Length: 128
Image (cartoon, rainbow, N blue to C red; front, side, top):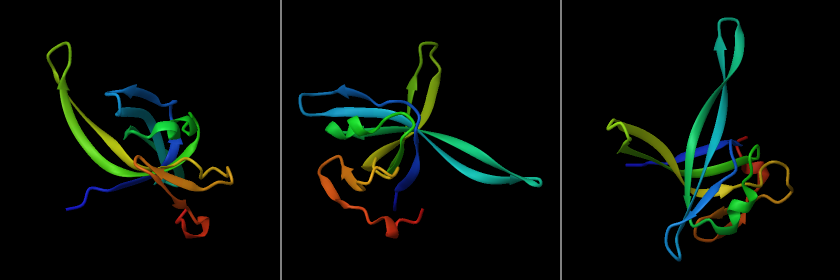
């Protein structure tokens, strides 16, 4: 079985990083992806918002800013909690494993994982 997600979109808010333990941190932010959908005779942009969580990305979080286009790979995680009113709330989020914040023409297309850097991405091989 496979649980793999690939997203290319714009960061919706600056990331927030919380230190969980001395060596572990969680960074969260939102990402919006869009697709063109034909409605009648017209084409319209439809936006989908994604909640993103990344474990131990360190200084990479400094490169992720609101409005920046990024590429990421990860997996979908579902969860639930009970709110203050006692109602069970369900949610989905993407746990990012690879984040490339350098696809917006920064001139440096290097991906990074939450564990170690990856080799530069060849723009000619990207499907977008």
